[in-house]
Image 1 (cartoon, helix red, strand yellow):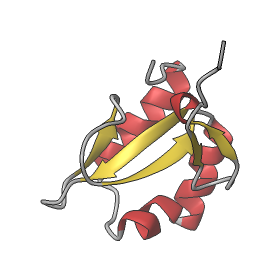
Image 2 (cartoon, helix red, strand yellow):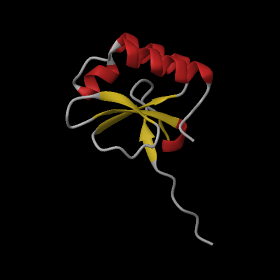
Image 3 (cartoon, rainbow, N blue to C red):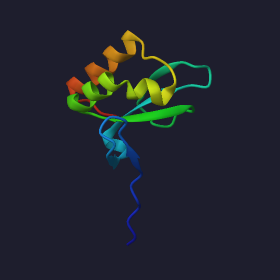
Image 4 (tube, rainbow, N blue to C red):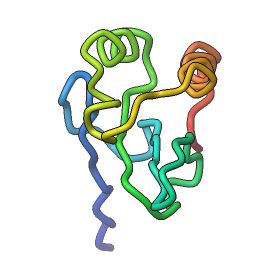
Length: 92
């Protein structure tokens, strides 16, 4: 039986390729809105980050999420991302 290839994506903080399902996606819609994409299928520019606190802090310090999306993160989105990472809930 042939096994399906798992899609890989790169974390914006640590720059490591990981399984798409193990990462959190942040999307910028064509209208310019930013939000967390739990489905991983919403249209727009998406960036991925590991679901760990080290990558979150590194991404905030280097502003790598903002740079990749060409838009600053709102405080609400930053807090939602932080709570998703600290609670250990991923996009399964």
